[in-house]
Image (cartoon, rainbow, N blue to C red; front, top):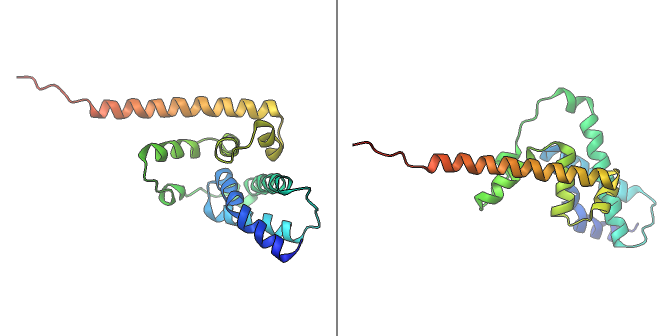
Length: 171
């Protein structure tokens, strides 16, 4: 791969790789490390890609695999997560912030599947390929994730409604 082709690929897919890793790991620092590792593998690799779509799928698959490696690492298993994403994710729309918080609270496999399917626009088959899982497994993850999000968001809505109910004043 030429330096020019690599620079173009890094500009085009760097953010996507970062977001996939961030959704899998819930840590900006770990996501940056994964992004750098994936881009380094692209730069050093001798892999020939059929087209841009093939390269994108390869990069996403490598990002998911590298994220899994980080999750399995000794340091990740023995440390306490800092939940820094709440400070970093300042969204203008409260509804979007609420949905993001609910998505980030999901288990990693559900969070990554939701991200790839809804935010990156991959099909279920493409999401399954990127996550190295069966298509039916990814369909189940998406179904369960949507159910959990629906439940969590409806509970949040009920909590908000109960706060906004004005108590009656007894004369």
